[in-house]
Length: 282
Ligand SMILES: [Mg+2]
Image (tube, rainbow, N blue to C red; front, side, top):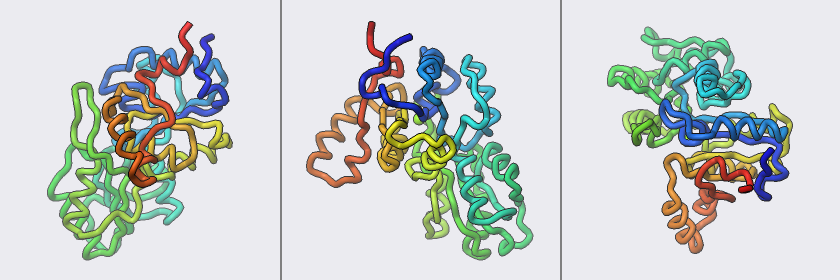
């Protein structure tokens, strides 16, 4: 068994971002499967926290199984599942108009909410919830706008990522849809449930009953993964296999010396080129 680097030797819970850390597009990041196995051999609990709301947690179990990583539905905290859980605390059995994909709709329906696709009465819609929608339509944007402006529905979002890492480069992220609705309603979302907001990490700490001091997050994006982890008081590890480069971190580091706390919160405790570097070299 490999030995963990000293900074991580007291860790009992590892929260892993997916896109850019475990895989990129349809490709496993080399050796990520073995690293996850090694963590479990060290009795470190592993969970996955993704801002991607397009797939259900069941789909993620299958996706990781294809990469030879064994998981259960309860190991996943997606912005869709986190949004569904938090929305249910605000109102049970709500009527919801969704800009988003199947993952978000199914997670909401699984907790008893009704997805309305063509509202007859805009006032009957409780919430408009926006996530990544790769089939984004003007007509749906117009319905969402009416639900909010004419019906008084409350506007929530799964996440506001500007981009989505895919196998070769970047595509537009959920923030594009969120900003479209902000523009045509003049309103901000009441809440955004994904990273960098604290809902997911708080839910994970509560479910696992492991303390923040013994928890770390592995992420590739500073303004979601690392910011969320720093706000939650857990150890933050930037992995450079996704959207962030060492140059970006160095530049931020130089700038942050004379800037405010919120910028410093974007800086990770540890930077690793790849997940393999969590273990000491033999
Ligand atoms: Mg990522």
